[in-house]
Length: 287
Image 1 (cartoon, rainbow, N blue to C red):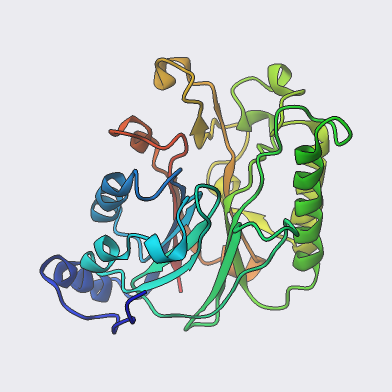
Image 2 (image 1 turned 90 degrees about the horizontal axis):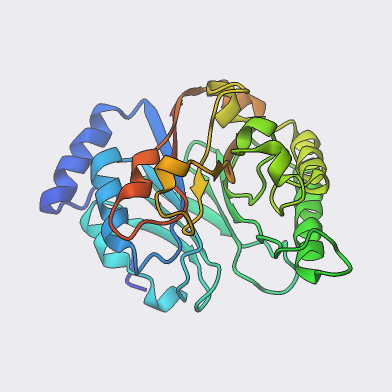
């Protein structure tokens, strides 16, 4: 990959982005989006960055090896700092930022080398962890469906990691679990559907309790408010049927959660040209 340049290297569009960043430097906005192939949907990503202008964007399911990651469009928009953990055709995560990043790590919670996590430290000491939890296949039974067992094991490894955390941390990504009844379009209809089964919900609850994570989505939009981040491609009209699930999350250590001042789900992105089946989340922090 090309060498990183300073955070305020000026290009025509990047100059405007830089000026906006300087004007609001007391706040930090962090976005998370399962993009379902960053190269195929690079136009949507660029549009999102122009319209929302987050300081940091965490991507999941990038589906590209590190050497082929499309870094140039991000740098042209002023996002000079890229930390990538890629894999050909499958999985892959990345953190793209206008502010400096350091101390990156890549944890193998899947225990098989899949590219599902990347973490960084910001200059203010905040840890940012970006994760893509396995979907878990179609059958919610460990014996009949090994993928489901791998998902549960992944969550348990995350739980052990969370219990040992001793620094302020923000955990974001596609968790592939919709934990609350109001996180899905029909609780009763989805009780036996992977992503909303009681065993997955219980595993996610253990993960949350292990560190005292604060669910930022539900802090700003308390249950039972409707809050969805994913709609299947199978629906002819996703908005009309609105059979959504909240699979994407932002969780924060309590001290960081107290500094969150806004959180939004960018639902209109689901109607853009060549959309991902997920939409971005954005949280703003007063740091």
